[in-house]
Image (cartoon, rainbow, N blue to C red; front, side, top):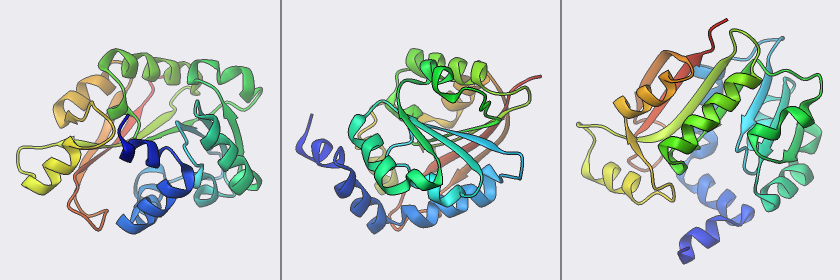
Length: 204
């Protein structure tokens, strides 16, 4: 692991870095444009990291899971009053959710950290956890033919080693869900960066 990667594993350092590049504004836009929670929403935040989305989504019912103990400890201490957090894999989340059956799952910056096999397994686990007609909102860096050199280099240098093309994302999501929306966004950060935002639906 590089020095940069080790530093970004520390919640406070990662928080400062994301603040500098404008991630807080991106969070608000993702919720408004793609998550769009209503009074019945039960939201599962997969690989929730520091748990920032708990506060942003309050007062909706929120449950965050991550397998990094340091992040979960940080999330509980800082955002515990806005939702619930547990250190576990998604496959084990049902043991902790009890009667809380999510109908929305969010994966923000998750899939590009996983191999295709790992991502396929994760998406299948999420599908099994969701209520019928549940939705998945996923956001990841993406390679596109028209993106500029700086945006491409930044995506290529991301900690996640599996940044994909738009088409590869759609194929991956399509194994477990029906993709409803797939938007390429270049307007979310203070640096040149290309995201793919997808909303996918579980079949009843």
